[in-house]
Length: 487
Image 1 (cartoon, helix red, strand yellow):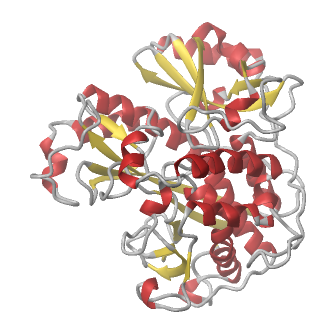
Image 2 (image 1 turned 90 degrees about the vertical axis):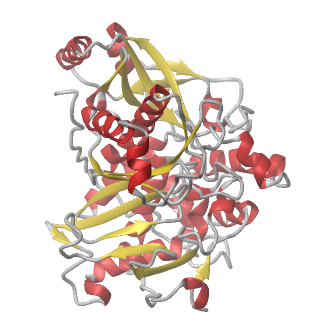
Image 3 (image 1 turned 135 degrees about the vertical axis):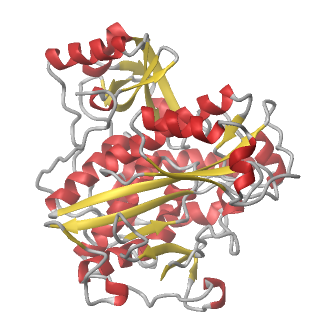
């Protein structure tokens, strides 16, 4: 029960594959099939008093005085409650109160009220102490989940939805691993751009220029149990990327939230700020949030050792086919903010085309085949996401699309072996926020994976952005929302 490492989690229950069944709405695209209700949520278990006492003792011994419990809302913003460590057990068992409108807060702090989410009602944030971490400075952090006053899981809980998708995956006899890449852009203490005169993309100089920053950041991440695969200077001035080690999908998503918290604290210690905006500066480089996924059945990988294209097994090919076919209708989950379309464009290595290819960095789905250069084995990278996404919903959607592909034996389209912009068969992902949201609203696949309450809340938040800021110049949007997704 050490607080230094994330535990592995495995939950299973009988369930049908995510989104099984055809769409109810004709002409809605490749995911056309009738809508099916999502499976029930998987309840966060209540720990025994002895475990709660041990967690409190460990946190106190680690110097933690207060416990932060956070959720991620539909706008991709982390929201939190804080209690004294002595109340950690209450935070876990009963939870801390919050308005249902937490699910429809917007990036400018407006509330996108709906008929279901208004001023009446209450939610409880329950902290998952099995994932708690002491993070220094007197603080501990744990991911939280949303529940009603009656103790039932909230249908808008993003972390709970991911747990349900993982239960479906286990019921289908599959196990998954997920790794994340985090891109962020450093600014000065006032939010201004750093000088460009010494920045070299992927250069040695930027890593060494700010004495100790990369080393301190790596140490801080490793100390809280976030495995770091690599860190490097990215293309944009002041931009870095941290690749996190693959893990169980729920733990992996938790680590993204924790890593962003740690990155924010370390950068502030250097008199800097970290932006996780999809486009921190107009005309500059965008920040991505890429997911790497792999699957096994009975210990046998699905993405290698088969007789399909690039060594894919039949199920591996179907999983890729499900992701490629489902991305246009679910892009709102991966990159649905008002700034996302400015990043997701051809020529930016952002994955603007719904296609796949071996090591094709312009494809939305990039296959990394098994070999000496892939120590964790073959995996697929979903490249079209950015940090404005809710990481739990993005992970759940990617896994759900793959599971749906396997369940329906989805055909894999031909590989794109060139720049997709030069291949007429490559499907361009929706290029405006309005088109992204229209496709999402039309997608029964999205509803089958996420459920109507999450889809409706996401649409409420993102439609507000579209109405309010859709005509605002990108430079102005970048300035206003540079730190909307920072911790």
